[in-house]
Each structure stands twice: as structure tokens, then as C-alpha cells.
Amino acid sequence: MKLAMIYSFLKNDLAVIEEAVNETIQSDNPVLREASSQLLQAGGKRIRPVFVLLAGKFGTYDIERMKAVAVSLELIHTASLVHDDVIDEAELRRGEPTIKSRWDNRIAMYTGDYIFARSLENLSMLENPRAHKTLAKTMVELCLGEIEQIKDKFDTDQNLRSYLRRIKRKTALLIAASCKLGAVASDAKPSYEKALWDYGYYVGMSYQIIDDVLDFTASEKELGKPAGSDLLQGNITLPVLYSMEDNAFKQKLDRLFEEKESLTHDKIKPLIETIKTNGSIERSLELSDRYLQKAYESLNQLPTGRAKQTLKGIAKYIGKRRA
Image (tube, rainbow, N blue to C red; front, side, top):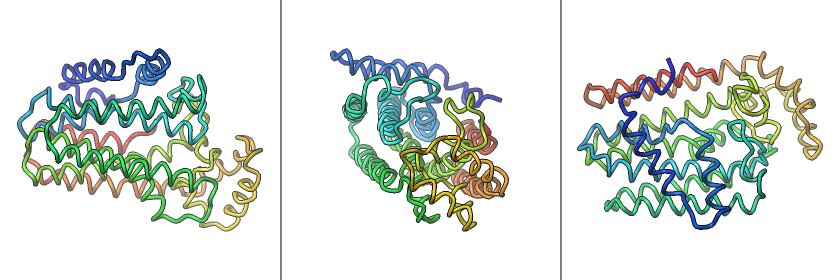
């Protein structure tokens, strides 16, 4: 089953949000307009708006209030992708040229900043200080995560704690905020709000771990970029972290990272093959499953209904995701 089938009953509301997202990023400046539109038109699962809408079902659901939150969160996610591509010097995003490769780093950074600003402007339509405070704190953590990602590049002296903190800021907090803000905007009970935040956090952690696994196990066609791109860019993800427990592997990686300017996919290919066969992939998936189990447990605090079953279905899909 495709992911979109799990939440197909939200199709009409998601169409409203999609239109609003595209309207919000329009600009009188032709470069900003084209650069922003390019990334949004490249697609994406729009999973954060989905979480907003589902969380809203546990309170008083109003599509206009949901739209204000969902559009803002999708734009924040989009802006973070633009910045990520600059940090990672990525040429492709979802199989298409990135903004930084079509224009340059400066245009990409200003485009990301513009989309961030539009997201905040959009949320101002929701008169709820708690919503604004939650979003502001999430953006602060997101930016800290981007700085950490730069700092940790090509640094093999990392541990599990630093990795988990990084993916929390990179992915999990925005998904958790999507769930919480959907509850806040619908005036859901505080206990539901807490359960939804926890669910989003655990699902987000699992999602990113699986993403990091897929970077080694999926095909270039499935990824939209060459397999092992994270390692090539100096990002130490969980399978690499586990592999570095073998001192021989770590020494090989250290030697390659010492000459990072001349690092190529061919040079890291033997390490990629080792990662795929040394048990690191399986161990990473086990940790992902533990986070998913906690996500399921968080749902126990919510009333039975279609929204709860859909959240459970999304978590199950994420756990089985292999491309």
C-alpha cells in the first residue's frame, strides 16, 4: 500500500493546503519566485501537513486553522531542505537540480530565508501565543541542528548521543511540532497534545534512522542521488557509527577523510559494501523499531477512531519503508 492511501480521506483538505503553500511562496522577485516554486513542484510527501490534520481531529477541527499551521510547517521543512543542500553541497534533490546548483549558494540561502519568513508570516493568522512559541522553539532547534551538521562533518570522533541529538533537531522535532500544533490549533485536551507530541517525536526519530539506512541500501533511482552520498559528504550516520566500532574500519575512514577534497564515490565504495554486510544495517533498523514501538505506545493515550488508526498505519508504513 502506498503511503497516500493510508490517509486518502484527507485528500480534499490536503489539496486546499497544497494550493495555499504555492500561493504563500509567491514573490514579486522573479528569482525568488522561480527558486521557491521549483522546490515545491519537485514533490514530496507533505507528511507534516498530514500530521497536522490528523492531530486536529482530536479537537475541534477547522480547516482554516489547520491550514495556517500546516502551510507554515511545510514551508519550514522546505526552507531547511534548501539550507541542507548548501551545507551538503548537493547537486540533486528528489532527482532534480538543487537551487544552489541552478543558481548559487547565496541565492539558495536567501531563498531558504525567504521561505522561513513566509512561514512565520503565514502562522500570524492563528492568534494563539502557544502555537507561535512552539514554532519559534522548533525553528531555533532546527537551526542549531544545521550548525551541528556543519561542525560534525568529516569528524569520526562522534558517539550515539551526538547522532541522536542531531537527528532529533534535523527531523524529529519538526514532526513532533506538526502533531502538537495540530492539537493546539484545534484546542485538543492537554493529554492528547502531549501524546501527539511524543508520537511525532518517536516517529521522526525512526523515520530519520531509516532514511540514513536507505542511503546505503536503496538504489540511485530510488534515492534520486548516488547511494552513500551522506558518507561522501562527511556525514556520520548510524550505520557508519556502528561500523566504526571496528577499529580497522575507522582507520580506513579516517585516512579517506584526511583527503576529503579528493574524496570520490569510488574511494568510499569498499566501505559502503562493508557497511551493508557487517550487521550495522540490521542494528540500525532495530533501534528504529524501538522508537516505533514507543510511538505506538504513545497512541494508547488517544481515543479510538479513524485519526488514531491512521497515525498507527503511518508508523507501520515507516517501519516497513525500504525506498
